[in-house]
Image 1 (cartoon, rainbow, N blue to C red):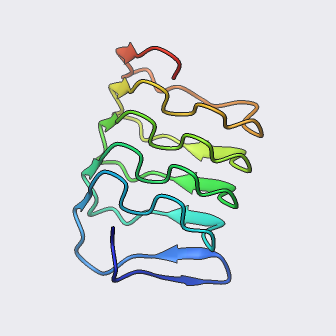
Image 2: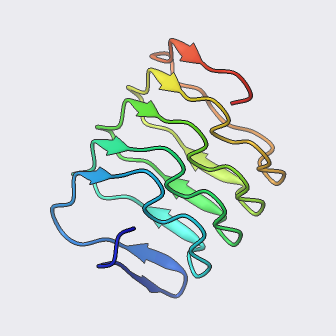
Length: 117
């Protein structure tokens, strides 16, 4: 879990210079509605936002090339995700049970979409 983060009016605020969000780092955080991740982030691990029930919108930074398993699983309010142009892989169950997500634009760089993504 990341301990040094804040939300302001539902928007996630991460510490300066962070480069990695490890597995489960923000899972189940109930105050996050919008996450605009800083450009310094290069890695987003498994289940990072899993179970963030109020999360509605995520904008991923350009250095992220892979979304790992269950990264947004059970984010039932998630309706908007902006994927980076150089994304190459979407992991298993990445958007599982994201019932509000109706449309997502997949970048041309995408090479692999795993089961139940």
